Structures are given as C-alpha cells and as structure tokens.
Image (cartoon, rainbow, N blue to C red):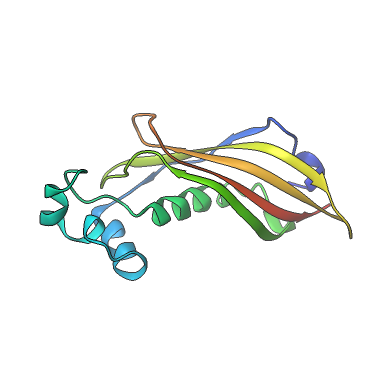
Length: 141
C-alpha cells in the first residue's frame, strides 16, 4: 500500500502461526537462553507449568505476521520506533497466534516520506491477548 492509503482506525488481521516446542527452544537457545524457555523439567516447577516462548520471540512473530500481509510493500524505508511493549500472557508450545494491526497515527514528513504507527495486538487460539506494542515505520509517499 502507498502511504496515502493508510488511515487512522484501519484494522488488518494476519494469518495464524503455530508455535512449536522446537521453534521456542531453538529461538531461546540463541537469543534468550533462560530456563523457562529451555528446561522443561525446571519450567514445570515454575509459575508457568511448562516451557513458554520468549517475549522477544512473540514480538518477532507478531512483526513477521504483520510484514507478511504485504501492506507496506516495497514502500517501507525503515522501522523507527517500537514503544509500549506488553507481554500480557505466556505463549506455550502449540499455541496458534494471530495479530490484529490497527493504524493509530499517520504523519507526513519531509522528502516525500511519512510515518505510519500501528498497534500490534497478538492473540492465541483462545482469543487471549498475549502481546501488544506500537510500531512506527518510515514509508515513501
């Protein structure tokens, strides 16, 4: 989409993705090597009763789902901010996640560019919110 096709209040829904135990532990081993993501026995004794996905992985998956809608197309220049990140519920192996994306701000900038801010709200297969955060990108006009 072109910059001028985005408007405040616009909502998109992404496809879904299943979080596997393998993807959770592979991501955690490289980027967030804490017991609640890697050690099933120790994680079962903790507050989550088993392995959970890293919040950073949940955020990355949310972003991936949004980007894969193709809404920015080739007009996106770069991300400029991520704010108000909230991990509201743990993500477990076999949870299926989808993201609702609401355009919250559209601003014209210099040099034929503009910024688009969206609120990413990610839900599991029970429609329970697991993540939310604001994302701003610079995009060609």
